[in-house]
Length: 515
Image (tube, rainbow, N blue to C red; front, side, top):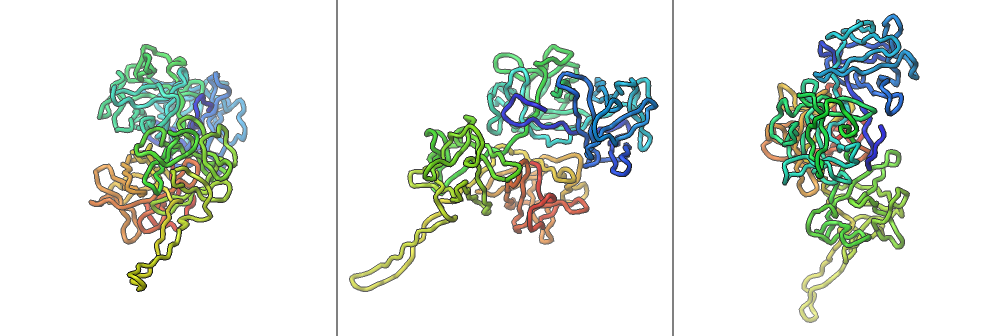
């Protein structure tokens, strides 16, 4: 999906739920399809592709990269490696939010149950209706296609305003909450957008919107059949008068990169406030002290974008400046995760340290390069006490994630959610719980829905009913993925039974989480 924004638009991946609450499933054996699964995992995830930006024809691609097709007799298959004429469908959106899929060449409708799926119905009935359950991570930035501006919480006005040039800070985070086939928009302070533009504390019919797709973009239809649109000079997000979505009613969902603050050993925040040189010389947290972490998918190295759109870059003599407008080798940094602190290594192989004047410079050969000073305390000619003074943590930084006050974790087998009958956590659910993430001197405390805290038991189980907070450590290891270490030094992972444990020695696909 293309975008006019600064970040990559998310590809629309989703599950399709039939009238019996079962998900459309693509099996590897024989490339067959059925509607038998009760939850959404890998085999139940589909991607929507469009023939062109403005066309109405869509193709449904399975997790195997094959396309759903129907022949003239209504027989359904999912083995086509490339879309052909039998793979062409039209979406017929219903008022309740469900979709019907009509074969474009044969005009019949796709539906059924269990192993008995066909595309032969001449009219839309219950078996031909599918609820759309987005499979992407539900926290994102929302971009207005017409205004080319981002939505953000305007707390003083009690509204969502579509007026930001860039999605900066926690106020630009939007969480999509799925319930009964519809979606609500939740702000970073845990309020819901109502169709009249007001923010309310509880979900209600006026906060539930049906997703519609047009030209690869999303539209949000309210309970009265009207669509969300930015209105007025500040772009107040509310339902307008239109009963059909035009350009003003279309939005992109963009991935929300982590945004962080750095505090140096001098206890001051790293900032671009003073100009192009990156310096640790500020005592307050503003947009000037906030940096967006963008992790390269191939090298796993990290780039730091400023709120002005430029990147940190290595310049001559080890200096670090915010002058790069394009990504290159000198804008890439390695992060070393050292418990409550991090170290940054620049492309010259040197560690970034904080100089006495606060400026950052990549000149250190190792982390914690200490200055050893031998001294003696004397009284006249008598040595009373020999000693050693060691100074130097100039390569260490405290890093604070600021745009995930609400934590939603999705692993390779599904979302993290409270277990129904115990204090443990599931890691393989198609629905998610929203946890609170609280910063604590380089570590994080994770609070459950009921106000209790996560902790790691002696057997390595992650439990959710602690009375006291316990430290967890977040390591942003890959693009869009975080590793989380428990107090026992092990990474959190989902085991084969779907239980969340803190027992992985290394980070791999089972211990990396979308967040």
